[in-house]
Image (cartoon, rainbow, N blue to C red; front, side, top):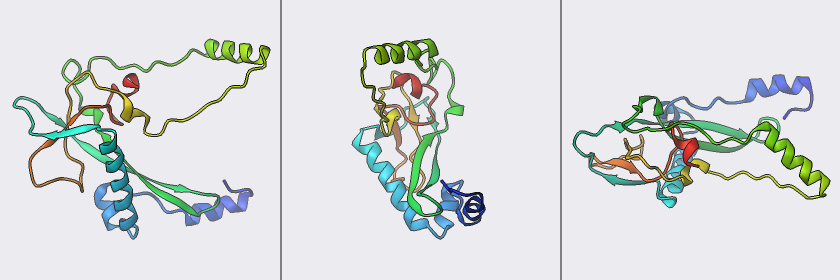
Amino acid sequence: MPRYLNDYVLMAETTEDAPQSYAEAMRSSNSEEWTKAMAEEIQALNKNQVWTLQVLPEGKKAIQSRWVYKIKTKTGDTIERFKARLVAKGCSQKHGIDIQETFSPVARYETIRTVLGVAAAEKLHLTQFDVSTTFLYGDLEEEIFLSQPEGFRDATNRVCKLNKSLYGLKQSPRCW
């Protein structure tokens, strides 16, 4: 983060915006970096066995997907890395068909305060952590199909049968 007010102005003038679509990413001057970022995301999805390619069963619909891009910066305007995340367009999910429940288990504020109080009284050390690609670890109960990601489609008409949750699905927070 900039240290002085004048640095914010400089940062605002020099920070490049992330593309809003796949087509925009491919037209940008950083298309090579965006292609690498998308390949890294696909590699993580394959490593976690998030989907299996198969023919769409009759009577089923595939949810569309899209890419979300972000430029991660260090202090000032130095670009640290280009990040691409594949997300499902969960707004097209239908309750009772490809979604049953939507909720996310969250600890109550009172519970967190109690844990912190006990830790302080007992002189315990607490640690917090972040799990990268969190949503990709949750198993799905529903049968959900996703269109192949733009830029990574094979020559067939297959779709991705999701084995694990994916960003953008309404049930992803519950699965984790």
